[in-house]
Length: 253
Length: 309
Image (tube, rainbow over all chains, first blue to last red; front, side):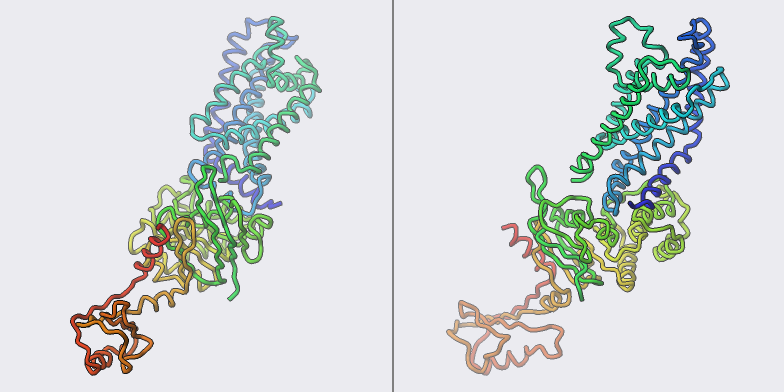
């Protein structure tokens, strides 16, 4: 393993993140605060408790997941798309590194950034609502796994994308609806039976359910299934990335 | 001199069937400067990209210092530095950070003293904290060279380093290349400019339509060009050369109407005076005299034309 190369890519990507520190930190804090003001204080005060939890607290795990998923995808996809776009990718291809090292560097940095933002949102949430985390170790595990798996997914999008529109396409048309309909702001048990069944085909449901369980001890689906779902998604992304580098698809002619 | 790069029967066909390389075999000697000349689309960049790992080959093999670029890519690529044709740089990075990144990418531990030397050699040291977007085109090209040298490569590929740069910068580039050669770096550069190859190369390769048409020592090539031909038109055709005119340098044209004399313009005595007096003494009458010289340009154009035909 060329660890120096991995850490070089990682540091390079993190520097970009810290260079735009205001954007990176202020915008998630601001948008989360707005969610709490609107859904927690304004509308939330008129919504009855969900599964015995105040609505303001109930949406915290969903809000964190929403940001972490979108941030993971956008960080990782931009991270690898940008070198392709400006042509500096030649350096990655001609360096004595293999795809595992490239992925570790880019995906590691993207996941770290997303994790930072997740933690910041959690910190912000403490200012607005009263929450206790029942299973902190599981909470961290779910958070880290989500950051990693969606950063892997973002990396795939970044390699696939041929222009900036395509880079935005998948997050906008697929991920955002899946996350919103994945129970970020509600328990899927609140849905009519038909929609409950349909929701079980949405992979994000398992993530948010498991993550919420680590906070409150209540879940829409069994915790083990949640874990399997995210592990399966991670494995699938890894397999696709392995195939991409084996065939050189969209990167090496 | 031993060979540091061995390219054997390298072929590259794209999915659409286009053959960019049609079996190139080329050995590059340690420490030399090899110039690859060829028109646009000849396959120069494809050849370099394939050696460096940016493009995969369809068949054939490349070894760098004995390491296969596919099966032993880490060892092979560690030895190679590549300066691409296009100015591909992260606009918001500073010069130092991008050069440091390149060194790290090749697995070399941080060594800012070594990078300082490289930047100073390329007159970039006072720009080290400048963002790349604020640099001039010439400076950006230097940054590309600095990045390629950051991991101390033994073989440096320069893909058209002086395309579109002004005369002054071109001279600077040549000086940089000469200094690198003095440090023992093997250099392969591609160019359209024949005078560039003449000015700095030890050997010259001509490539067209994906084939290597010629690789020769520059001096030999120059010597061939240094040769001039003198054609003497005779008033009446003759059947054979008179005995007193017989020499290796003189031949009778197939129609018998002219004599062709080849001589070296750089020699102390060209032998023209003696030839003309001998011709007169042999009783031949001259109607005209003309001389012609082939340049590298002619050789190059002829080769490329022959290949196209």
